[in-house]
Image 1 (cartoon, rainbow, N blue to C red):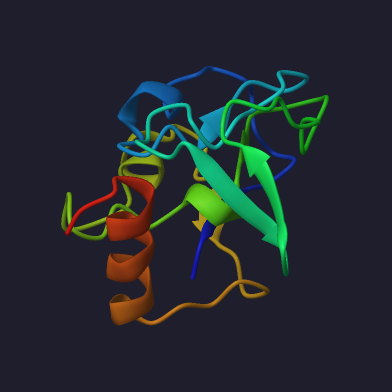
Image 2: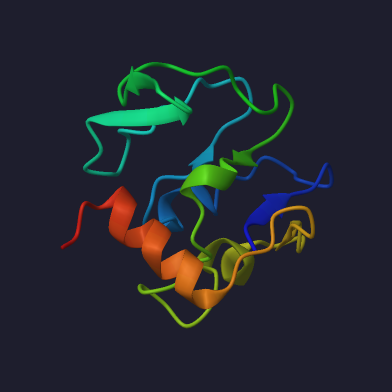
Length: 116
């Protein structure tokens, strides 16, 4: 499952540089699939593709947020999600609405970084 940041976030920013997929953004900041990945183009709907550098509306305007489609829970990089490990207020928590098995997370990592 992906990690999410709760509204208890104090906007310290400790989590952002720890993400190997650049899936964490400051509140109010637009995000892209290309940031921190090797993606060039992304299928957003069946048959609909966008340039991976296309800016997408922020998930939150108030506090740091994690883009679910880019979060791999650090699988393939670290033993545990690094955002949760460094968060001083424990607001980086598993997102029960986005559960994924280890194999799915590894496949997502391979997709994001265009690994063979």
